[in-house]
Length: 110
Length: 113
Image 1 (spheres, rainbow over the protein chains, first blue to last red):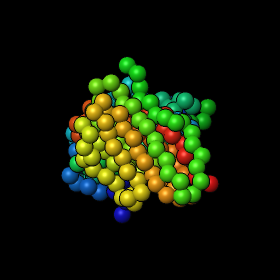
Image 2 (cartoon, rainbow over the protein chains, first blue to last red; image 1 turned 180 degrees about the vertical axis):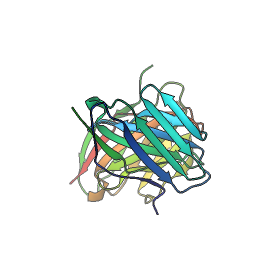
Image 3 (cartoon, chains in turn brown, purple; image 1 turned 180 degrees about the horizontal axis):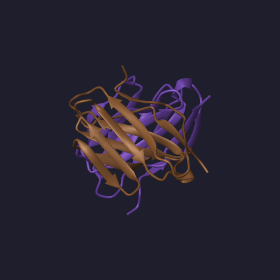
Image 4 (cartoon, one colour; image 1 turned 60 degrees about the horizontal axis):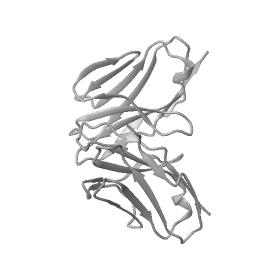
């Protein structure tokens, strides 16, 4: 079992729709969770971090964390073509080691 | 603030050679993590340094090594290069806490022929 799992996609949504990206992790002791966005040929950039159960909203982005289910998600509202990228879920597993999922490719169709 | 810088940006080496990559973190950041990114394996953790000490390492062979200097700059070295070492090598800097956001450099793209 991979430590951090994501659906590789591609996930295709029309412009203006909600994109829902999901991630599960295996280490129950993990405390810090991150979503990064990576455009083709570029390095990852942080979108959201979340540390406690529940929802965290930042503009069009909402991160959701459920530690009991070992599940993290990212919702993108009013998706734009510029949101088309690979989204990486990252989990800090303790000991200052961050494990990344393989990423979900998102396409937003104009 | 200046971002994370990595040098060189591109490298071509042949099998058996060794290579050294450099990373300068954001000013004030004392943690540097290194990752290997390939299309097949995604982003894989190599090691993390904080105040010149390696605090954790990933599952890579001993050919991969690193170090951190007193000014927080870090280098990673790969000896006896193999074709499979061709990848994008990314470093990320942070304050060094578990909650700390990592900021990535532009990466060094290594091609081993």
